[in-house]
Length: 395
Image 1 (cartoon, rainbow, N blue to C red):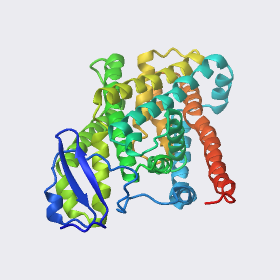
Image 2 (cartoon, rainbow, N blue to C red):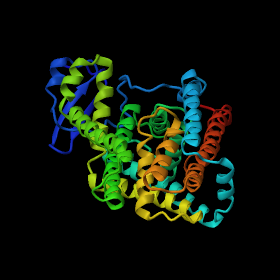
Image 3 (cartoon, one colour):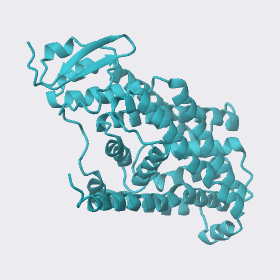
Image 4 (cartoon, rainbow, N blue to C red):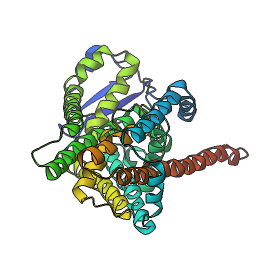
């Protein structure tokens, strides 16, 4: 006999047609009886279970504390030191770079902003489809923002990643999704984790293809560390997904009772959002070509003779260097890696290489700080104005 005052939720697997009733306070024996390889559909938003869900209640305050923390200041110090090392190692004259930049074609350079910011809308549309595939839609009571709203959330997440290390912006993105739609923090983070894994795998595929076109079967020694990092990235991603899939039941048994629902939602969202793999992987594949187009337009504005294949190689190699978040958005590390490849491997003139790096980082990093700051201030004003506007409204 089950007490009628216990809240409950129904997990239904559309893949195998098996449903199980999971209740708060359920025994470990009943949990183990659940299907082990089915993906549970999320409960309706209106049926709150009271289970613990990871994620802070005031993430903006967490971001502010992290931004002013010693670790963040040290990371920016490391970035400045690396940038200084880049200038010294490549024997770059800042005055010559500035003179080269002043001769850039402003119209062609302006076109480089189009693929960069258009990619955010593509990512927003894809993320919406992934959230729906994971089972969070209007039919279950979740008010998922339209593509424009999801795009704004992604831009704010990239903005946060450009200010603080350790990819904290991805957690901020899950927090904003929860605020906007009610999707649990762990489930939102699961869709972001799946998206990151897909983009990393597609990055390695595009990097390998562009390297074959540019270098043939003779990979320069300077490019081997990047190739090694890419291989490690693929192995880690595939192994991580496998471990997450096959050890679900064992992990749930080891976790405290209050965290089991959180992990269950995280795991279900990771694999549920990949139910349409062709769409997700296909968009991830072409997004890296958009980054290559951005580099090519920047180089074209300087009349630098860089082929589209080289531009794609430089773009994905720069993105690869941001995977290990020593500094915010790879500041300094990206400049060092891209500059070493342009000058040491491809033989580009150091002044031209430095000009390409400066202009591209202006598009993909410094302009994002401005755009993200504007969106962040607008969001804060809207949130603070909201309670004041409704203070005199009767309940």
